Length: 156
Ligand code: ZN
Image (cartoon, rainbow, N blue to C red; front, top):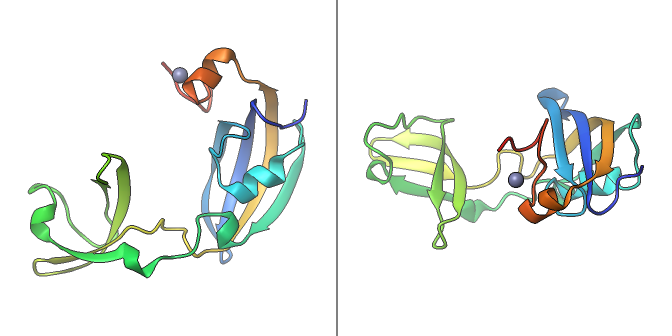
């Protein structure tokens, strides 16, 4: 079976950026639903269990370019009082629709906290080493929920 729209694909991956290992693991996603970065989904199209490959993805095919307008200075009082507000800590803000927006604290100077809404991998070229572990049909329930059930996915 080949990876195509509405198939559940399980992969093991290793991510390297600038020669440094950044992340590795296993994940299961529903193909064709923009659940993973676009370049990786494109590379996986048509693959089957047992395939392995390496790919280099430009920022546009991964987490996008950095947007300097995503860097803002906010007061310390914008954070919960008991939060550890230090460079490198990650928090979630909410946009006007209540969607979570992850941010990273990049600098703390007195009451001024510099935060960056860019994804930490924005602007980076990503090197992936991928092994396809399994390709199967998504169940109607998985398609209705919009996520994978079982190993690598949601446990209800
Ligand atoms: Zn579900």
